Image (cartoon, rainbow, N blue to C red; front, side, top):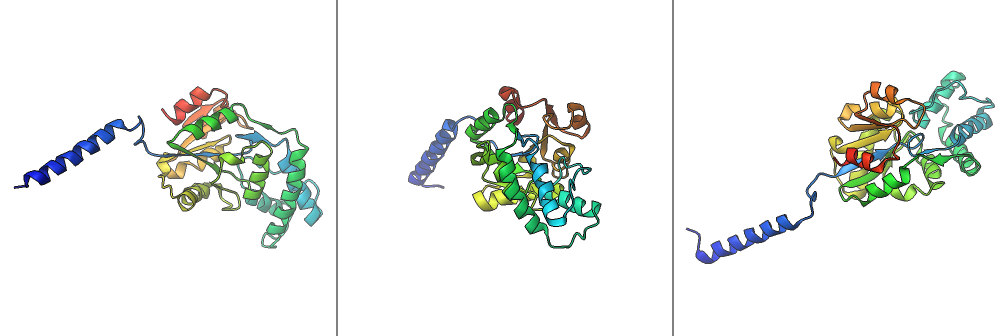
Length: 256
């Protein structure tokens, strides 16, 4: 039989724990959500600065003008785009020029972003502020841009402070392998562990949709890029929005 004094102490502890549980804010024990944004066509439009900078860099190194003119870039990683450029122009893909190419590319991208007609997409600032205020959400990037290029583009619109972690086109050439990279970086950099089912991938192309599917992540597509809402639905997006201008509607999807 438990001694009276020990029993009283045990009951007192249980009552304190019960009171603490009852007093926490609503939603405190909800699982953390990792909200991952694509950049081009989703967060912003670079006004053509990206393609111009890629083309200039390729011409400077390989003397090929408009090298990417017939290559579709939507949703691809920068590494994949460069590889397709090599194949198209019969250049050895193992030539070792990638680091130099991207050094030249980022130099021109910085110049071109400053002179472009780029703009931020509708509702993005409001959506990011709202998400940042949510204790149950952490923001990240899942983009085909190499990180240096991504940071240049985001910096032009003051968006870098929202995104301290993410997966980039220099992490893997295959976009479908970037979500595990982002989740791993979140744990290593912030000691936050999330499951794939608690990830929300937001983008404007079928490739943004497909990169979430192997892992059971939630796909939210926005028709703010080159693809229609119908095409994004057909690609298998869980939800498709015209854009993020309706912050309440967007947040109701993220935090139902």
